[in-house]
Image (cartoon, rainbow over all chains, first blue to last red; front, side):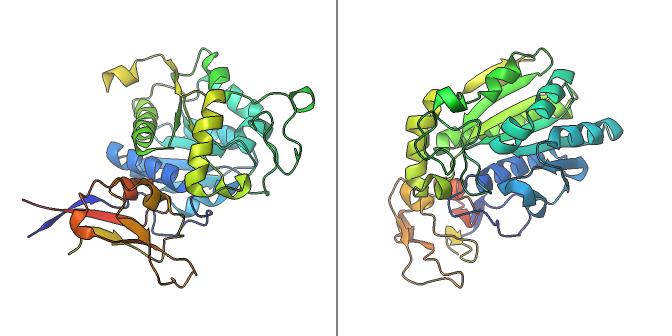
Length: 253
Length: 70
């Protein structure tokens, strides 16, 4: 009897073992990006831009070209790459500490200029790499290293909703928020990432995919419990859905 | 050839595949890998339907799934 392969590592994902903590969602999101690149057959002309944060070493994990930008500046670097090499598929891969804190200006203006790049934004409501400090996306009442009594809106403000903010701009063509807390949602996330890259391949414009993710280590929870916590606490604050789809890519697919 | 193949050197023992398997036929193995983790293992491969929920959920892409061709 012959065996048919149902699932294995995508070609664009390198064989290097991830340095991420056990259960970290970065691995799955890396895989979804690699699968989208493979399915669109653009691996030979893709250039990624890694952020500062846990995914700073993302260049080790993909079999296509990669750059690594200064903290928060990935959209600016991606702008430069895309403008000098317009045939390339350029994307940034950023966390919430990188994109929503130090890099807010870069992302807002790259989106507003309608740069023809794709942004994968991983939001886990905490700074992971530096040891679990409060991020702009940290939930109200959430305990972190720098908010030991829970985040207080009167001194630290409220969680920033980047997707909603970027969707208010005119230029972006696709802004969506997904999660990977179950396989059903993971398949929707895969579709969203595919759509974002498809739009860029067609030369349409700025696409933004926010992935609500877990950080088991800094949340102090087991990976399976973290996904439950995400569903119960993060999703009410960061509702899933597509905020902007100017060209109707979701309907046409 | 088996339907469920794990690369134990990649497994970090996070247990997401064990929690998500709809048939509950995954469990921790009773041996340690060189990294010092108890990797995931399949307990009853005959029951496996090759749905690949475990493999798609694996953050370290350590699992490969095969299906018998009819």
